[in-house]
Image 1 (spheres, rainbow, N blue to C red):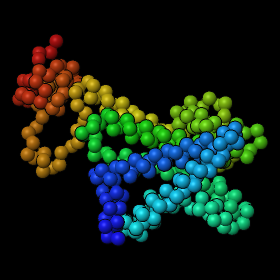
Image 2: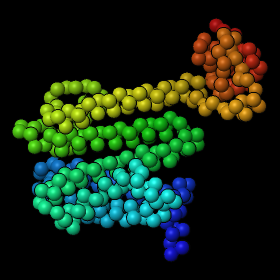
Image 3: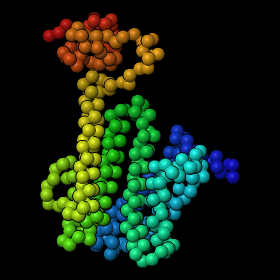
Image 4: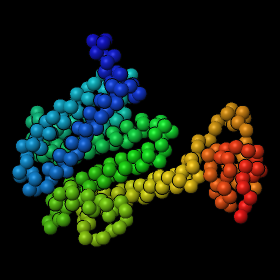
Length: 298
């Protein structure tokens, strides 16, 4: 048992180990498969033709997610902290409604509510954000712009999936609704997140409008994140390197001040030209302060 626990601790807790990376990729695959199955199952003609496959995916996902939750509880250094924490609650909500449906516990009305509550599994896509945060240390080795774009795309995918699914379940029972499936809700979610508001499809219920407000606010946050990613990429393309983290007080005391352009703009190592006046740098990061490493301004 000690050997098994050590193996599972490395696979689920040691973020730098190859075993942890393989387990995370396996879980991510089933998260994408689960989300894709939930989305496609809401399309009427697909549900009528492939319902057996959707049920098979549902049962497989339930087994895998339940096993993952039990293992996380077992190997967690602070079990209470995990169970009552954000990720523990998300993991539990992802499997609890399906477990209740499988065991057929409660009245028909209660089981109907649990069938709708399966939408909470969509919160599993937030695990992608956790993985992105765990890999944030790779910014310097794999490229800041590349990692920032990955984080943005993950945030966009999570937002698009969550809001389109929630608005579908909020609007699907309304007479004459255009939210006939989650893919239809995705078209609306794109409009809401980008503030395009074409007006061809919109929620009419109170819950649907609350989802719309949250989606619009989320879109503003995504826009700010995108501007940061684009700004970082332009910074790298223009000046050679991205903006570096500020050094600590102890490190700043030992580090010589950066060179400065003749116009007074401080220069960072690797810059190819001054961002203020455009003067080219002859030897990036070299030369005394005051513009000695610069060519004469044209």
